[in-house]
Structures are given as C-alpha cells and as structure tokens.
Picture 1 (cartoon, protein in one colour):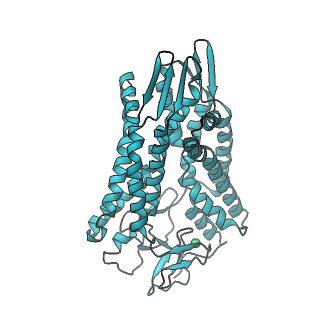
Picture 2: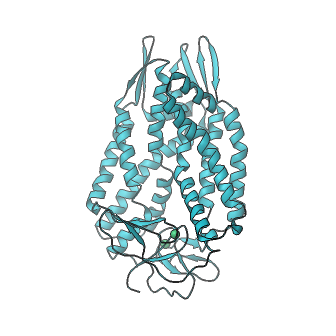
Picture 3: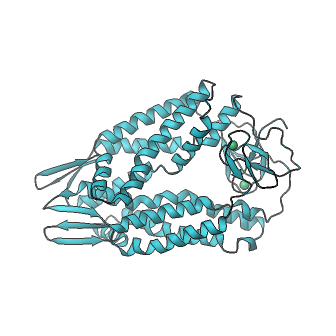
Length: 420
Ligand SMILES: [Zn+2]
Ligand SMILES: [Zn+2]
C-alpha cells in the first residue's frame, strides 16, 4: 500500500489518507467522526502562533483581571493572586486543580507545541519527541482557559451589585488567549506525528500492514499496524503501549460514574461559598448562585451557569450510564451512529462544568475586604470540582469502538468523506 492509513478513533474503520485542499476536513464514512484536516496555516505560521500565545499568556497573567472598590478601599487581582489566595485560605482541593487547569497546563500546552513544531521544522526529532507529544496530549485535554474566561465574566456580573468594578487589562488578554488556545488545540499529537510523517522523519502509518490480520492504531501517535492476538502491544513508531480495545471499561467507567454520582450530592447540598458582611453571613449553593444571578436581572448568565453547572454534569452522568447499560444489545449502524454522536458531545462539553468552581475562586480573591465584605470558598466547590474531574475521566475510559464491533465490518479500506 502506497499511501498512509488512518483508523477512525470512534468506530475503528480503516481509511486511506488522501491529500486535501487547505481548510478541508476528512471524516469517517461510517460514523462521521473527523479524521484529519488540512490547515490553511503553514508550519511556520503555526510556530508564530505559539509564540504569540506565549506572549499573550504572559500579559494575561501579569495584568489584573479586575479592580474592585468598596468604601474607599481598592483591590485588584491577577489570576495568580486569586490562585495563591485560595491556597492560603486552605481550600487546596479547589486551588490545586484550578492552578493546573488554568495556569500550568495551558502554559505547558503552548511550550510543548512550540517545541514539537520547532523539531519538525528543523527536520531533526530528538529521542524524547514521543514523550513530549504524549505530554502535549494530556495537557491540551485538561487546559481550560476559555472556561476560565467565562468564569471571569460571570464573577464580574455577580460583583457588580456588591461594589464598584473596573475591568482590568488582564481580561482582554484572557479573551485573546482563549481564541489562540482554541486554535492551538487543533495542533494535537496525532497531527504533529502526521507532519513528522509528511516530512519523512518517522515511519509511515500503515506501512507494511497485512490487512488479512487484525489491525489497530496506536492511541498515542495514530500509527496503524498489525496487532498480535494478545490484543496489547508496543507501538513500533512511538513505543507507547496500547490495547486493541480499552481494557476493563465496565469496571472502570462504572466505578468512576458511581463515585461521581455520590459526590454530586454534597456538591449540590453544601455551600460552594459564604459571603460575610457586617449585616451577617450568607452561604451560597450552586443552585442558589443561579437564582441570585436571575434576580440581578442577568437571566442570560443565569442560564449559562445553570446549563454548565446543573444540566451538563447531570446529563453527562446520565448519558454515560445509558452508553454503558446493555451496550451489547444495541444493534445496527444507525443506532451506533447515534451513540457515537452522544459520546462525542459528552467528550466535548466535559470541561465546561468547571465554570462555577472558577467563579467561586475569583470571587473569593476579589472580595476580600475584612470588616466590610469577604467571600470564602467552601467544601461544596471542592466536591463539585471532583465530580467534573471524575466524569471527564469516565468519558476518557469509555471505548465507543466496542459498540461498533457488533456491526458487520468489511475489511476494505475506504476513502474518507471530504467537506470543504
Ligand atoms: Zn468512524
Ligand atoms: Zn505510537
């Protein structure tokens, strides 16, 4: 076979890689999942984009996101101030994931992408290229700057009623950073391996594959190769261990789902924050926060927070349970397409539920006027963050290919469907 092979990550159908026009997308003929796309940007432009993202990242973290004035006192906070204050308050179960997801992971995502692009451009791959790309994949999955940006906006509306608020320069930088990181997320490990392949630096995906024997793609680099009957092997290209299908998904996904469901109760019943004023102390739950936003008249933000914090986590738990229950009894291609689409949605919305955790963190940092008004992070926020992390892990442990294995599969290699 002359051209490279691509395997659909959701249904395992084999496709031949064809060259596309810039901006075009190739998707799976069987389930519709996007397989790869041809960028309008050159490698050089992507590299420039990473440098731009790094500069904007520095600006976003250097300047305060907001200034708050109350009875002659003014307080301003950068994202780092907010994270440090949460640590100092002792809410480390909130501070730790927030620090990773909004600071270290986005920074790592930019740096690893920059390094990998630089290696490909110089046409020299170091020995640790494969570890770098594995790292990039994990970091970009958990990097949550767009969610943080929405969190800042919601926090500002909530504060508008309490004190005089001025938007900081950091907010504009976070807006720009969200756009740049959303574009940069497209530069995934698979794509970087494809660039390395096209530059002739690594072995071609599907090289020397015998289609009469079982075939699978490495989950770390996407390289298509023959699989031994044991169903587990080490990738011939990037040396990562991978399975024919994800192992023990029943136990793993159910364990994560059940734990998340149990923790979802304290996350909603316990307050996520308390507001201390000279007039008294008030505890706020997640749902209470939504009602409060509604009463301020910002029904649009109330709706966004309601969807992100209530609708998304509960429907994610429900959707994953539906996918897990009796999955061997759902038959037919049409049914599997529906299930794959449902799974893709669950994967996509995963991190947006972190919204309320970030809102609480920012509020507690900005409203710190002892004697006048103070907001503290409460355990409900930590439980809520754990629920979001657990459901994201559950979605990652699920394997939609298992459902497709029930359908009759022809061994032929297809051309992908192309959209412009
Ligand atoms: Zn597919
Ligand atoms: Zn590999």
